[in-house]
Image 1 (cartoon, one colour):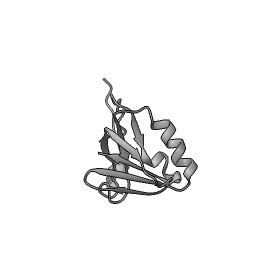
Image 2 (cartoon, one colour):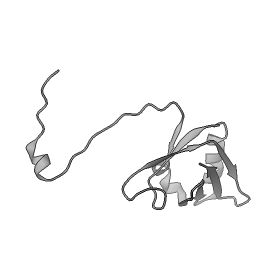
Image 3 (cartoon, one colour):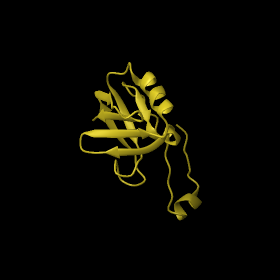
Image 4 (cartoon, one colour):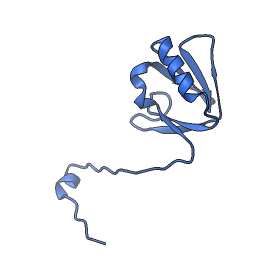
Length: 107
């Protein structure tokens, strides 16, 4: 193992960064990757509600996720986790509402 010496200027500024690679056993959907297609994300104790900006985006998501039975949603949205953090939610059920732009996940 080689000795790694960090750049002291990084610590002088009080900043630190790390990269962690996670290999999940279940599929993961990171909402920040589809954020431009979402009007809002609302979290409660037992549900996550996605409101898409257009009906076609919701239908595209429905087709992509229809075969999933269990998966994780990772949020970085205000009201779903602490500011500046991400939170994983295990999803085992979701439904499509009569509103053409909304999907409700049960966490």
